[in-house]
Amino acid sequence: MRSLLAAAFALLLTAEAQASCVCRCVDGEMQPLCGSPIDLPPICPLTVCALVPPSVKPMQPLGILPPGTSQCSQHQVLNPATRQYEWRSVCN
Image (cartoon, rainbow, N blue to C red; front, side):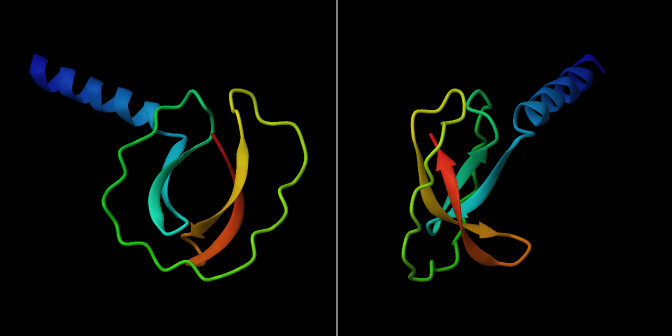
């Protein structure tokens, strides 16, 4: 019983740590995307992503970087709802 409770607690902690991170196809490769730089990124499953359609990279918008990031750049991210790539700003 004690080991079952410990396993459930460990699973709960893991789920909360990865709650704000998702795995998405970015430029044709599966990568974790997190809402905050302090979030622990999940290990993404090996997945074959759809081919990235050729397009011209948009201009990088000028502005203040989010706290805890050093740079942002434009990448094509697969939208799971529409199954189409969209240009998004991804920060490191």
